[in-house]
Length: 142
Image 1 (cartoon, one colour):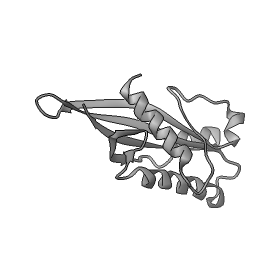
Image 2 (cartoon, rainbow, N blue to C red):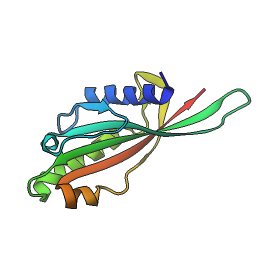
Image 3 (cartoon, helix red, strand yellow):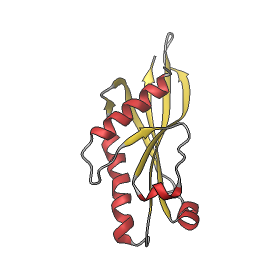
């Protein structure tokens, strides 16, 4: 299997074992695609995004693997009482992986997290759905 999918699978395993404020079941996808009526339930998708390869030393390369983690849920009112717990979950996921090595893939260690925009405005407006995507970067030297 490709290293990026190994890293993504390790991320899924750690998310599913984590104790966070909302119960979740993360799954790896290439293209997360769900029916709108199914979005009433919380979806956490882990998607391999990209890799940047640079020289590390004479015999090895540094591979920075980017993995997207999407938190999605259709909302009723969109008020703070409904959305704040979802945004808190996203922040908890970001905090959970900061400075972390992946247990199932210990050669991968966290480098950075990107979270912009905080939520997808078009999903909010068109689908009445909260969608927030973190891009986590894990480094593997090989």
